[in-house]
Amino acid sequence: MAMRKLLDRVEMAGALDRVGDPLRRGVRAVLPDRVRDALHGVWLGHPLHPAAVQLPVGAWMSAAVLDALPGTGKAATVLVGVGTATAVPAAVAGLTDWASLSRKQRRVGLVHAAANAIALGLYAGSLAARLTGNGRRGRWLAYAGLGTASLGAYVGGHLSFRQAAGVNQAEPFLRQIPEGWHDLCEHAELTEGKPMVARIGDVPVLVTRLGDGVTVMIERCGHHTGPLGDGELTRVGGADCVVCPWHGSTFRLADGVVVRGPAATDQPLLRTRVVDGRVQASLP
Ligand code: FES
Image 1: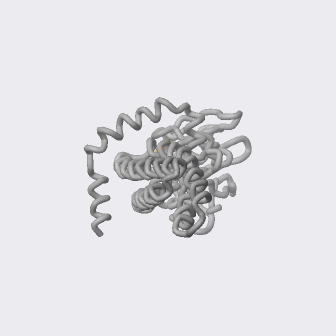
Image 2: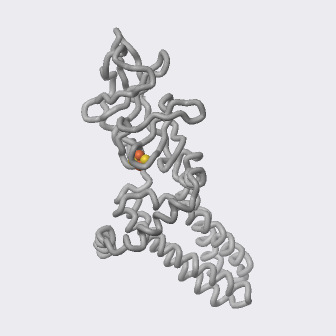
């Protein structure tokens, strides 16, 4: 309960913005768009950071077990080295995601990053101690690093599961759509390549005529629910795409595939059909 209250206070701690805001500007200025997309996990269709942290966490946890057993010092040193080396790209991916979060999420993310940076420093110290023959010191530094990384993981859990950072925000809209076909608009009112916004109950959808076909996608961006209906159209790789007006995530209209981040997941598309000149959609 104390931790929950503490994290609630972190969410409201405006003083953290004095560090967070310049850091965010720096991350966005330093990393080119293509590198940021790669680090967000656009190529993976899934955020990269949660997958990348498995390597250091697995190596460090395994080292902790070996450190408790006799005669396994060399193997534990290798694992501490592997964990320390792989934590660096995982941290860079996390930092990239962090820079596209909302303000309250960034405050909590800053604490998460600080705990993990301290853990990384402790593990680097542990590795140095082990390589210079001070195994006992190396073990204690590693245990301190594991404890600090666990604290960072707890804060990361708050960020993901309480604040929904990195979650596909378009998915809950799908769950609001009842089974069956839903009438949207006249096929004749659609102009080629000019999406229009229609509604299925409370759920806004983006209806686009592409050649003889029609696509219908959830209109709220999977990143932070930006209104794709207000987005500009562009072409990427010869395909018509819509650009989210909030942070620039770009989705192919034909199949919803994300081609530019910060969103890392595809935008959900509905099934469509045209009956008596009316466009209808249903759950995929
Ligand atoms: S809401 Fe952030 S890119 Fe769409």
